[in-house]
Length: 90
Image (cartoon, rainbow, N blue to C red; front, side):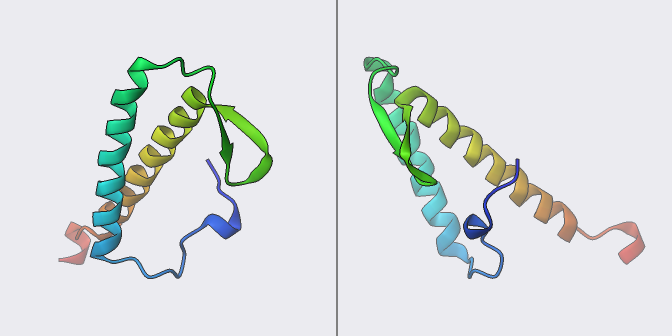
């Protein structure tokens, strides 16, 4: 899935604090997902960052966040795989 150019982190400073913040956000997301079991996810609406005119059902918003975070993990694993030494590099 492609993203908007202004949302790409290329050239931004990523460090250990970025990972710590991501892990903290994942813990918060797990807490919200646990709490969401108690409400109707079709009723509340949420705004999205790419358009102030589009609103999603809360359940759809949570689904997008989970998939988006999964995408970040895939991207990070891809980078780690590229940095692994190969037999050709030894």
